Length: 133
Image: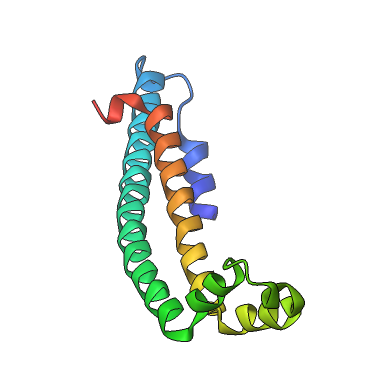
C-alpha cells in the first residue's frame, strides 16, 4: 500500500497525455465487449445443452410413465365409466403414486434453465447488437 502512495505522490499531475481519457474509455469498452461475448457464448451453449438434456430426460420420463402404469390410470380416468366416478379418490391416489415425481421435477428444472438461458442470450444480443454482426 505504501508503494502506491509513493508512486502517486511522484506523479506530476500537469503532464497527462491529451488522449488519456479516450484510451481509458476504449479499454473499458473493449473489456465490456469481451465480457458480453463470453456471456453470450455461455448462455447460447447452455441453451443448446439444456435442449439436448430436455430431449433425453423427456424420453426417460415418457419411458417411466409407460412402465409405472400412470398412462393406464389416466386412460381409465377419462374412460367415462361410472365405477371411476364412484372410486375417484382411490384413482387419484393411484395416479399420484404411479407418477415419477422426481423425474418430472428434473425435467421441469431443465426446462426452466433452458428458458432462462434463452432469455439471457436474447437480452445480451439485444443489448450488444454490434457483437453479433
